[in-house]
Each structure stands twice: as C-alpha cells, then as structure tokens.
Image (cartoon, rainbow, N blue to C red):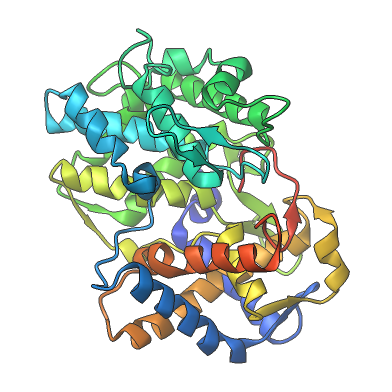
Amino acid sequence: MSSLAYRLLTPEAVRERSTELYAAALDGRLPGWRVHPEALPACADLVAAEIRSRYPTLEVPFHARWRHFTVGGVDRWAALRALADFPSPAAEARAAFDLAILSVLLDAGAGAAWRYAETGTGQVLRRSEGLAVASLAMFAAGAFAEDGVSPRADAARLARITEAELAIGFQAGETNPLIGLAGRAALLRRLGEVALAAPEVFARADSARPGGIFDLLAAGGEVPARAILIALLRHLGPIWPGREALEGVPLGDCWRHPGIRRADETAGLVPFHKLSQWLAYSLVEPLQAAGQVVVGLDALTGLAEYRNGGLFLDAGVIALEDPEAATREHAPGDPLVVGWRALTVALLDAVAPLVRERLGLTDFPLARVLEGGTWWVGRRLAAEKREDGGPPLKILSDGTLF
C-alpha cells in the first residue's frame, strides 16, 4: 500500500483535514458556509440535557449498531444468541461481526417513505431502526448463509445476493420505496467477492465470511480502536463503488474539496470513512464480549452524517451562505456537502469537551457523546423543523453513503 494512501486510511487524516476546513470556515474562507462558534455553548446545553434525559445515571453505551437491535425494548441479538447456542466465544464473535458488518453497510439513509413491519412484535419501524431490525431478521432466518438457515453470513452467498431478495427482506416495493436498494445489494455482492478473494483475512478459522476479520483483530492482546478502523479500511476498501483511488488503492468515503492544499497527490482529498467508523464503533462490544481489551476509543472521530451535521445546522452553529441551497438536491461530492461533513467532524470534537464539562465527567468518550446526545438531538431538531424529519440539506444518495 502506498504511504500516501495509507495516511488517508486513518482516523488521524479524517480529523486533520476536517479541522483544516473548519479553520478556513472560522476565517470566512469556506465557500457556502458560515460558522457561529458563539452558538456552541447552547448546543452543548441541548446535548447534555438529552444525555441526562435518556441516561439519568450517565451510564451511556457506545454509539453502535447494537443500540438499534433493542428498539422498542426488545433485545433481538440476545434472543438470537440464546437460540443459536454458539459453541464458543469466538464463534459468537464471528457471528456478531457478520451481523454488524452487514447491518452497518445496509444502514445508508432509507428515505422518509420506507417502513418495516416487524413480525412478532407488531412494531412498525423507520430509518436506521427499521433497517437494523430488517437486516437482523434476514440474518436470523439464514438469508445470508450458504445453507439458508444458519445465523451467519457466507461470502459465497453474499456474492450472489440480488436486489429482489433484499427487497423481500426489507419489505420494499413501489408502495414502500427504499432509497438505494440496488446500491445496497451491489455493496453486499462486492463484500462477498472481497472476502472470497482474501482468505488470509476472512477465512483464518472458518470458511470465508465477513466475520472472519475477528480472528485477524483478536490475534494479539490489546486491540487499539484505530487498528479496527484501519483493518476495515484496508480490507473492505474495494467494496465501495466509483470512489477515489490513489496509486490503485481505493480510498472509500473520501472526497475532493479545493480548500485542502498539499504538494502531493493527496491535494484536495478529504476522508470521512463514515460507515467504516460506525462499523469500527460497532465491533468494539463483540470484541469485548470475546475477552479482548479495546483501547484508545477516542482515536476515532465523530461521524460525518446527516443527524450530527443536521444538529449543528439546525442549532445555528453553522449556516448556509445561500439559504436557497437548502431547497436543492446536492451530490455527495459537491464541495458544499464535503464542507458540511468536515464541519460536522470538527464541531463534534469542539462540542464534546463542553458536554463533558456540563455533565461533570472527564472520562466520557466521544462514542458516548454521540450515542447519548448529538445523534438524538439532531433527529429531534429535524422532526421539529421539518415535517418529514429529514436532514436540513438534501443529498442524492445511492444507498452507500449516509
């Protein structure tokens, strides 16, 4: 792997380049955006109040896919584990990795119209929660397994999955449209192909499966959180469609902005790795359950997605230079969107210490700030300000980004 590409496949690059664009915005040099740092304290008040409301004891779990599997007070993963009766902690961890990887990759925005009616509970779910429960139901039914019944994901099965099969599992159709369905199915097929092509990573202790990366990460003692992300970026990078590459290395969720100036081929490149970092956060708990010690969680950054980004826009911490831009749709690579996502990462770092101060806590990782407050306040403000509860900026999605 080229050293230049390697640097962009790190959380440090995400933080560094996002902070660079934030500094430009503070100086009035980020086209399309204005920053109002004086609004940050009031924003921190909102986030701290949300955390105290949701978690009165301040025992906040990590921001991870596992939270969505318990929507409506039903612990679906615990129920699945009890039925599966995995033969060892490692076997359970591989299955948990399978589920988390699949479910996170399927977690791009569903759109305002889509709904999922859960069999058994009668719950009708939307957005991230609906996508989570739908993916878990398919996983539990063996939809991703080669034998068609086991709760696992086999690379060979994923490589053959179709849009029609995914539509059935997600109850999607003309009357229940799910944004980016074809993109989601294609992403799973590429995941299967990548896992099949790298048995040294994905088949170290079992047949090729996404969860096989557990054995790679668990090979040592302590597991640094940044190592989880870097492994995901290196080994899953080829699954992302039509994205930037450097010297033949796929860069994944990395986009161009003219505000990033360098004297090498990385000029203009801004990495975010949103889904990969969301996935890295989501793999912490399965690693811990298998007896691994995960360290350095704050090396990962906040997530450059529309709930956190919407929080800062709706709370007045940032503002569009042209308010009419909120009425138009924008491509993910539009500098306006890239700038918004960079501001989101930097502002999450800026608001986190203010939130800790209000809570009277020093040991409160960013992963807990995200889960306890920023994501939820972003969603609440969106519901208050827009009838469909959607983001304040409209992004054209192919089902693989947000």
